[in-house]
Length: 246
Image (cartoon, helix red, strand yellow):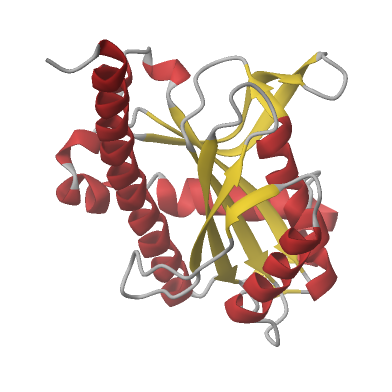
């Protein structure tokens, strides 16, 4: 008979493997929505957002992605994975975390919040405590990779009050057509290698999750608190240079 601790570890590995597969399907769908966006070729005007809204341009981009694509095309995902028939996509959902640097409880504003993952029974928690978080950043010049990595730093430093899956998401809106997912991933890896506060076990490496897209890069890091568990970040590097206008 297996020792109880061994049995628990094997069970957790199985649950993590199932969750990994589910997250990969969600990422496939997000990329599929990005492909639809490119076909539609909308024009997102910085001048319009500045004059006609009170939104930061980054917030406008993620709202349009969620409202116009992620919410409206869910049938594509459900036909692929029936267990995701209740999946929801929201923006700027607030959860709580404890800052390990000062020990204070603070608000965690999640850029894109993906909930109802069909994994409630696997993790034995309520749906509200089981979600996939994606943080977004604009990349206008290569040096913006520094700000992009602020979200990676948050992932390793923050002690979340509810269950946090060992998977996180980061999405880049690339605004300069001379920048590519290759040049950006290379710059991010360069900065990760120089970081003393982000422990990286696997640097960004391209993974084909959707045949229409080459800019998905998983990386593996270690939390800076508790048992210092490993987790994966899926980086989606989206080229918005042809749809963003002044």
